[in-house]
Image (cartoon, rainbow, N blue to C red; front, side):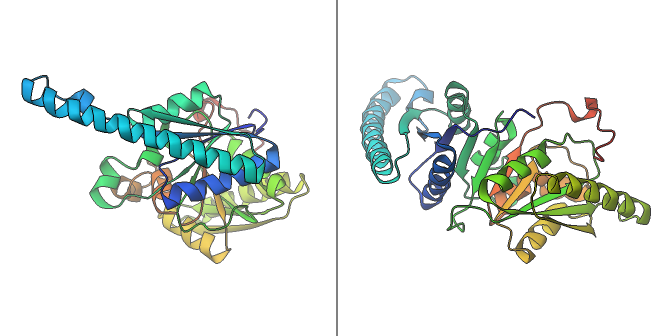
Length: 302
C-alpha cells in the first residue's frame, strides 16, 4: 500500500442531513491532516435524454430553463456553505456543481482532483432495489480507486475511538490492516480485530485464530491497543454489525471487493454492499490495489 496521506478530500453533497454529516467528518479529518476539501453537488439532468419532437422540444426547453435556475441556486448555496466552513474552521474548501449521472460525476471529480479519500453520506437501500441496483454510494465504493468513507445520518460525532477490523480466510492483500492502523494512529483509536470462521469447522476456526493473532502483533508493533475475537457464522455482515454494536465501534474497515463467497451473499448481496447500505456507523471501504490472487501472502496469514 502506498502511504495513506490524506491531503485531498472529495465530499459529494446534496444538502441533505446525511451529506452534511459526512461533511462534518471531512472537516474533522481535514483539520487533522491539513487537507483540502472539494465539495461536489450533482444534479441529474432529464431533458437531455428526451426524444426530439416538437412537443417535447417545447416541454424540455422549459425544463432546461428550470434546471439552469436550480443549477444557479445550487452554486450559490454551495459557495455560501464553503465560505462559512472556511471562515469558521480554517479549512481550504471549494465547491463544484455539475449535471450528469451521480456516480460518474463523483468518480470523474475524484480523478481530476486526485482525491485521497471520498467521504459521502449514504441513505441506504432495501429489498429488491438493493439487490439489483444498490445505492449511489455503493456504486462509488465499487468503482472508486481511492478509499471511500460512507456515513449514515445516525452518525452524530466526528472522530473515531473504536475501529472494527473484520476478516475471513480468503486471499487478500494486507491493505485493510494498514489502513486501519493509519486511521487508529490518526485518531488515537483502539482496533478490534474480528475473525470470522465462515466454514464453521474446528480446524478452520483454529486457522482463523492464528491469523488474528498475527494481525494483532502487527498492530501492536505500531504502539496501538488491539483486542481479538474469533467467531463462527455463515452470515458475515450480520455478525460484523452485531459485534460492532457490542464493542461500541464507530468505524468499520472493509475491503470493497464484490466476490460472493457465502451462499447467504447470493441472496442478500455482497458483504461490502450490505455493510455500506446497512451499517449505522461509518464504513471505510478499501478497494484492493492488486489482484489478491496474484499476491504472495505467505508469512502474513491472509
